[in-house]
Length: 584
Image (cartoon, rainbow, N blue to C red; front, side):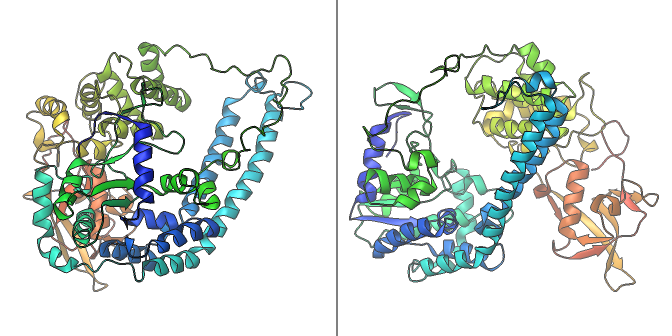
């Protein structure tokens, strides 16, 4: 049931092959897997759907998964066509590349790129002109993909509905709904998966637990010796991913995606719970990309379209062994080294300089240098300084810094220095470089830093922040706290001329969070929200952004969907640790 931190990759693949090919294996699909199936191109989709249907009664869909999927089909359709979002993001990235390259390139930097067939080194104008031509073509391809994806929605939903019908578990999920909150709370207290990662979600936080309970009960009366969860969602509360594995030579190696496989096990307690329902049964997690490799390459089932959907084109149709032909001749002086020389790591002093730079390119290079050291588990001097600089970079909108902060607090990176890094992030958010309280905390990483307030590993960082802010707590609407408190605000309203409700005040106990401001003032609700009316939920989000707290920790006396109006002079009060105003 329990797995070593170091396991054999070959043994893992062999076990997975045997399970997927077994005649007594039962398969249960979750929402993420089915959405991935639906978004495949028709030929690949037909191959995997035919295989799933061929399993007969051994393929089942939990009722809650069907409920979630119907929600996507009926109203929340964007997840069913991920290509649309990917194409939009790619086109935006191309535009950024064009603008940044115009700022970055001169003749000297352009000369470093020798295009095949060119008469000589390119200059700035030639490089940019070629880049623009190439981007026009690739942008057209992206727009075509987006249009085609938008037109595929109806076809995708038809395939998914056909796959669902007749395969949904006969589960009494309604009985669970009465007690699921209490069950979830007890499991959460003991760290019993799944659903731990969703504990702070506003919507569907119990979905994973309901699905799992369906699977456990669904195994009770089937002749299964192995259970496979088909899922593209391998969050830590479902999966255990060992950091290292033994390679074919028996040596320790990083657990990276290799030949289509990454070693991922279900959490041991999930296996234990399943075996209370089906004694002796094994449990495996299989993603759609892994299934594609298993079915086509490992089991020889003939799934070329599915396999090519998850394999680079050059690899999907690789020539048979012994038919490669003579090696390509490489002109003298243009040989590629087998192993590029490793560059010496950037000194910490230089990283500090880069992170503190006002130049986005230099700051991004500093973030990359920090990530490189953390991934290599190299010693990291001045982690608190680096943590402070990272949140300052997040605050000015540097996306790589935001991603790195989330990786650190998720304990995916920097395990050795993570506490000091987070201490620096807390300090940089609430204090300036001189150690004095900022007029207002930095906004960028607030949600991330509140997200770890109840994580035991980061408690020393939290206690350090609380000690530094002792005596100033009432200057803040909320601060990170081990007990994860919520603030309940009263939105006072009165009847408006339009027969709606007009917001006249926002109160936190006896403290008013609103005051009269001049029309057009940046603190007015109209300026903060961008309209003269909004839902209570939109008002809550504006309050969260202004007072630097997570929206999930703000409650109000009104229904979130209720709309309220506000006139041009109602605004939010000035606040901060350097003012005399107390928010609570």
